[in-house]
Length: 74
Image (cartoon, rainbow, N blue to C red):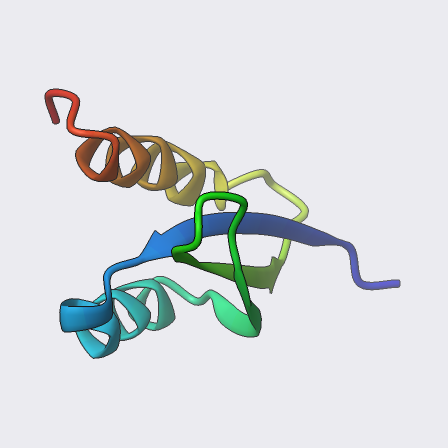
C-alpha cells in the first residue's frame, strides 16, 4: 500500500511557476491550490514515502522554504 507525505507552501503570484517547478523536481505532486486565511494562495502537495525514509530530505527543504517565505533566515 502506498503511503504519502504532504507539504503546504505559500505561492507568490509573481513566481508561481518557479515555485511549482522547484517542488516538482523534488518529486512533489500538486494536489490543490486554495486561498489562504490571509488572502494569499497556498499550494498542497503530496508524494509517496519511501520505505527507508529517504524522503525526509524533502521535509528539510520544505522547512527552509517556509522560513524564506516567512522572511526568516535561510
